[in-house]
Image (cartoon, rainbow, N blue to C red; front, side, top):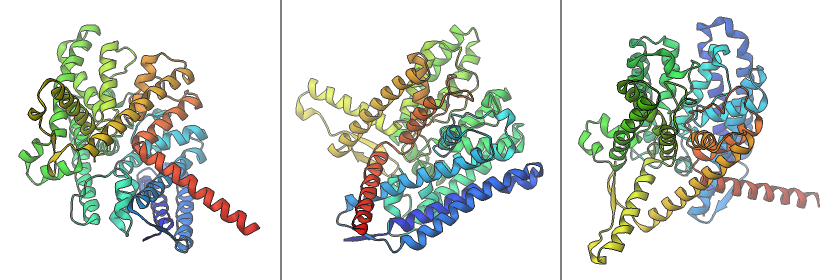
Length: 494
């Protein structure tokens, strides 16, 4: 029987979220004219810290027992789900209290920030530096995840369950805390290098820091109205592509690269599949854009490379608006957004490994029908840790997730046609962007978007970031806890 103290873990996470909300105040010495906004961040952050402290103190008295590992993991899912919803609510408050956005818009911006999506309802041309930094900082932290950051500071008996529940499949070091610290160190190193690279390419320091945070987290919030396209700089686009590809690469693969194990990293199935997709999709997009928009093939290829990388990495930066794009490259972008980035990275989408597994399983099934049974081998794929068999459990989990994801995509796209009054192509693009936590928009999401459309997209972003089943199991156990509490209160009154 495993004794669990989820309330204490929730309290720690609530305190940490409060500290993250206060962190943007660090830029005020550089922008003293924005000091008046400090109260909104301080008030929100301190309230979250106070609430977390109360949960830590009183939560220790409330313990429950788990008879099996599965139940323990489900309760961890519940804790992760609670933490993310708390983070979304708290993260929205500075936007709302300061009058920057309406309530639903504030929640939308918070969801888009923490989930590293990048869809936005803010007019960045009218937004102060502290809020621009806050949005980018949210994405940088959201890419790591709340549990990851908590584990770096303190780890408990249930930390591994929470770590897995948040969507971190790989343990890079023997010790969980060392794993989190190693990932954080890589993240910081790439942030520094990315910021310096942007500055060298001519981007202002503030913009460089914000864009580096959002590129690495595959977030996509920009300080410019026209995103990366506003700079009209090939060097800035190249730096952004490199950072996006780093962000969409599994942390375990990045560790191999940093250790100089290039050959081992190059053998990883997910890495090979990533570059194969770019090799196929980029020329197709370049040809289509150059042929139908009247630009040269070189320019079409440049736009194709950047925007395909942005869609596949689920970052959401753009070099040009998509309203004028023909249907064919729009369809390719939708496919790339659905596929998404690497498992164990900051990216969203179905994930490269799952799509690769589905293709391998499909090929294996065809072989079974065409060849004698004895000629068909058990399929394998290569992870950072080495060659792995595609067994029945992995196949079942993959097929179930992909099926559920595609059903949600269809349902969400159809809902958007109703709420936004748009065509199916536009709805599919926008919801693929929301569900895949991409952040690219075909024009449906902006300052004038209605609340119903924003709510549909918010649901897509949350389900996409927390990988569907975590939301479902967490919500189920959350309702179970509420019912149990209600029964206790009813009995106490009797």
